[in-house]
Image (cartoon, rainbow, N blue to C red; front, top):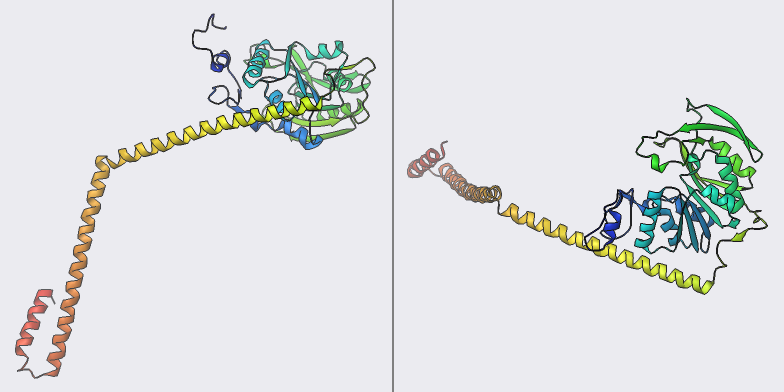
Length: 370
């Protein structure tokens, strides 16, 4: 439940605190989730295959927290229309739109119903994490094929070694395969992130690829395959129908791109990125200064601690002993030289002449303990 009123000064944090988040919204100082927008490569896979999405009209199915929406705008999409069925996630998308000043439009509702009722076309349909939530995924794929010549899919699929799921043969739009029903736990904390129906049907990976080919996608590139994904086997793909033709009654979702406006928008987007990076750099610099101050404070505390002072005292005492040892070694060397000289005298002169010297030698030996 939302609080009835917010009495603190207006801020982006007030809006963010209305929900718990998965994504880390890229606003300096904002406390949201931990999953960094920049660590998700799914939109970059579009560039890997198509080279660019500059000027594309994009339909996004299930935007979640608008992370991919933001990324596609950064990559140059002329427009993004995102449809979300969850009221909570829809409101999160609106919050992100306000925070990041997105041009994207967000609609609340079932995207299957939208594609069934609207005669619209797009350059690309981006469907990440939605196909495996459909009760009739083949029908969704057919709707996508009718509305755009390009598609991105990230979806779980039914692995060949998975058991416990009943295979149900189906034929949709002339394509035959098997569905595997997955029933949702209504009490699960993640139920709000699942499909709109009590259950969904998953497909085999090869059936998904074959269905896309049957519906006209003559080029399909599997960009990632994750058979050991914690949520079950998953993969992503980019598809293109090079012979695609818009339905007769279909109209573009936006007017043709005005290049002057497009480049002005591109410059504005770049300025926004520069501002964001500048703020991030300032934030990192503040963290660096604080870390240096903490390190200096810890160093001063260490230098002033009794243990450190005792260590310094012991080191000084050890240095005094070392110097004293060096002095004693020098004296010992002098005494050794004197004894050698005495020995030479004793060997070269008569005993009578050297008796006093022999006496001195005995004294020296006694002193040394020989």
